[in-house]
Length: 581
Image (cartoon, rainbow, N blue to C red; front, side, top):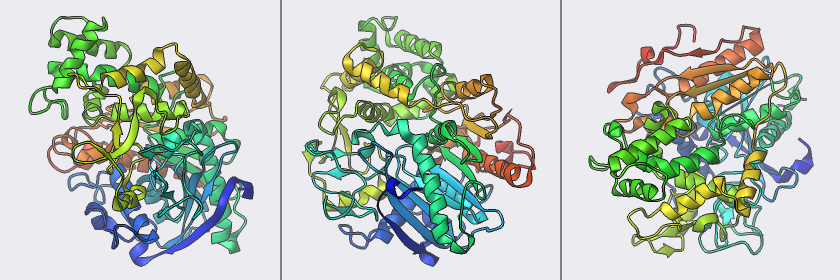
């Protein structure tokens, strides 16, 4: 990495014993417990915010529940002492920096020099891939480089943001992860993904490559006796989950020889002309799914019913869409079937729709749509489309200033996309029976409308498309067939097909009964229907590593013969992993 790519200094810190690299000293039991408290809730230390950020990142990605099998059937939380090197980096032309971080274990394997590189899942902070990349790489002696890929939880409100060490600071007191452009501040909360003015998704691949270069440069600093570390003498494996996996595949399409192998789990990816872009099916789901879930076939689906019946607002959505001429039928049941038919025609599978119910119940479609639309339109916190905004409210839903203790927790706890951690998704609602309709209509019109904003948004989405990787780069894609957030039919399937059509040889692992959020498997009535995806990612990394180090053949594409976990604990048989996996 060249010095001009960094913004400010590199922060080095040592981590061992009660503050190791992989779990910040919490171990598996501590990760399963409640989030560690701050001694002073208003002014936590860098060590405290780091520990809590690692706790939150693990619990956002992995199923650590007592029935999920983590630590027994697969995975573990080793005690890994070492050092961290963190910095802000910038893509040329970007308004805001992104975070890069290297974890260098004391027990680095000098005989099989390895750098694992991962971007955060979702819009999470820099530790957002630790449950996959860190948990696999660090115990085997690999160093692990991370990036928040221009998203993250460095929320800004009124006059404070987040410094490099994770604590709150004002502009001028320290370099900040994110601060709105001069004159763009507004009452409420600004987030980097939505309001940086950069459309960071278009640069996710560059963020990953920059993190890889940062990692190699910091390895020189961490192990000077073994320097220099280069792409020719150090194996670089890129991995990730969800948006982090999409970033890995974007990086693969830009790579000119830095990367040795890629393992992508449930990627948010599209190639121009194939599949569907995220914003297309998110805005479609926000519009149609509430009505479709009224259909009787969802009676036993988790999160599709409120006290045994569909939400009243969902039934109102059916009536409104019928009045608009979008659905057939004069009763809710017929209208729901019509909405479901439209979703089937556009490519949604029944397996994806069953888990999409949870995203509907948790209001993820509006949250994702509002954030991504703002990013694509390069909006400020004061100019979010469709009347949306982010802010803190009191018990009566009245906007209020954030308490100091709440602000102090954001960097550790927030997902990067409100609502959550005390920050609400506000605006774009009314007092009708279908209160979110106006905002949802606006989000969908930005995709299929003809306004200047719609044209700008679609042009920004084109910028995010992945490219076909160079010939010879091993790429292994793992995806759950029950993924209702990033459906396989819209993402991995067309991506793999595009690579095959271009003469590449990607490996595709399809996992029936796996969905998008392993962390949701700990929820009652939900996890018994599915298996986790992380075990397949770990096995895929094992197989990729065996190929790169020992010359073992790459695995074949396959569809695993999984069975649902059931009401008891996960078994090896449910995963249908071969004895050699």
